[in-house]
Image 1 (tube, rainbow, N blue to C red):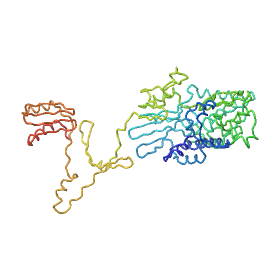
Image 2 (image 1 turned 135 degrees about the vertical axis):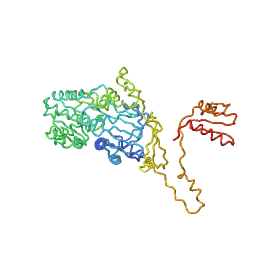
Image 3 (image 1 turned 30 degrees about the horizontal axis):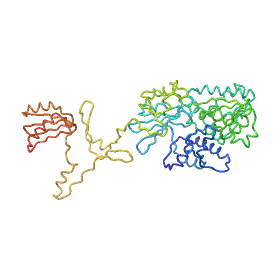
Image 4 (image 1 turned 90 degrees about the vertical axis):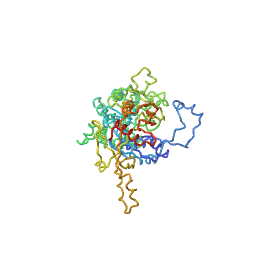
Length: 551
């Protein structure tokens, strides 16, 4: 979502974007916060070009960064609003028709408010796209697994970035480190995004602070969008898990942070200036951005608290290396705790899920098909399924392993009424149909053929009308194969001697040398070639027909 303005505003994009409502609203908040943080930093002049030789002199990790020439300046709020105006809102399980060719359906992925997996299906094929998904019971609606069954292809991405860390264990560690720091008279800094895991962390702290005797410690949430984020989370009731949905009807706020705000235990501010400076009390817990520690209010707190070993910074976001984030601040007396909380699927959960939904083919990034480089012995940290998954690399074009073989055609009721099916073998009936195929917007309809025009008066046109295709009776259709040996025996019974059989690439040729006649048998046709002897041709034709089924 964060990259959307670069796609819609800078690539000549003219299409439609589909997303759920919480995705749009929370995506807006994340982009608004980013733009706000970047625009706060004054720049005396704006540079747009790179100097190639300078990159090697930059500190790590910048000196090793790939493709810095493709980096872009941050978008503006105007571009954010323009990108969001191109989005069409959709709900879970809503079927969206694209050009009459495929139906696209979003399903709950269980990872965040409004996060989706997508099904792309035609009448006979089904492709499922699975991005960030979670089977854990957190605040979003549970993952819809049943709808992923019977997929021809499952495209799998967005697995956990830290497969060895258990989210529950990390939350426990987060709470215990936070309590220990506060008891020792220090402050806790939590660099985070303004939405997502923060809702779960506040809920855990709500249950934990009273039992740990920390109910007087203030929690501060500082972000330009803090207020909107906390309020939005309470109004998206239908996108929440059942437990939280039920609270709305009591009526109670679905998230306990509403109560923390009412009791003044949790306070939120748009920035560190203004009201926050007056209310600020220590020791305290501060949630603020940005998790990279490169911009946003978190930089101020790093400068303020970094020099004391009583204070602790707790990293919960898995997106960035905490060592890289801390690099510019070293040496740093402040304690650092890494508790990455990533609720997305791990390899054990994926292996179990694939056994349940049983896609015919799995497509995934190359990284998932081999253990991580740092733990090459861990064969459990890769996708294990049969047949083995097809892997892809960035920007690679894949041909998916299935073909479109069938198209659905509707038959108009009046045409259906006129069909007369005949049973040709037990359980199989056929009917001939003469119709007009009408195609519009990739939908196909069989309509009755146009009626023949009434014969005009006068004798001149009589013959033409008699021969019009509508008035001609149907010729019988033939099916079956002709066993050549049996046919030759039948010829001999009827007095034809000197019969030769010749094999060809497409079938057989039977040569009646005495009568100077050829009979060509091919898979879908039979030709009788004889000169000037119509009675012989008809006789041979009747013999061929005895071996075929008429319909």
